[in-house]
Image (cartoon, rainbow, N blue to C red; front, side, top):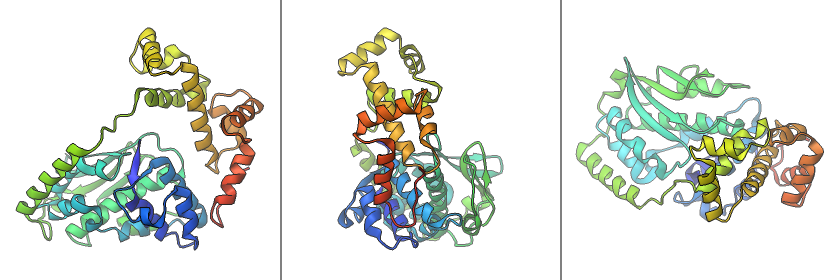
Length: 345
């Protein structure tokens, strides 16, 4: 399951200044006050993105909460991972080793670090950007990285370039203030670029001995991590969901995209007690519920995106899945949402 540590959710909730009732936000992500204080607890990434979206709706169009969250982050809050980054001899040392261990607190994105000409690039790879909750989480991830870098070096540290895959609407004043430059949107990747001089300067409290000790401890922690490889049926559901906007895909199309022959594909489904039809239904249900949470999609658009030719057919299927019509489902979400948030009809 793709997920992130409660570290992120807790901080976003704390900085939701326009939503005084934090209890409703905890209810939204299904956590108690005790659970939110435990950084080992993981939050499903879809739930985290929904949280980001609700908080964003309370601030639009001048979004600041996620950058305030970034600025409040500290290395110590990330346990051994953060302490290791803080003790690295240089930022280059930190970046080149620490990317391997990000899954200890972020099982959604993957990271890489490399020199590109006269710049050093820290980049992030995630699945399809999705809606505003996903956009903001990507901005927050890069913003947090920069805050931790500043803690290990100097508060004056600035990247020479910041870029994001998604397009952006609304004010970016908070981003410019935090990063020290105007980000590029619609870029090929999400990345921070630093001058080589900056990444090769000794860190403020870098200690090679402590660094090596903490890295060995992180290696041991990684060995205990559960296998995060998604199940075969989960991968099938994900592949079907990718294709639904073009209509319900054929079994042959999905099996080909997964690099399997039709017979092998069907046999694997059968061995696991599934049929292609049941997983297609599951993919449509999950995608429909995800899209209804977004205020940017009408029901007719959601019907199209989930492979239905008519909204009426979608409505009947959705009621079969959830026991509610799409309108009633969205209405229930609205009733549970914090004051000031909104969901489209």
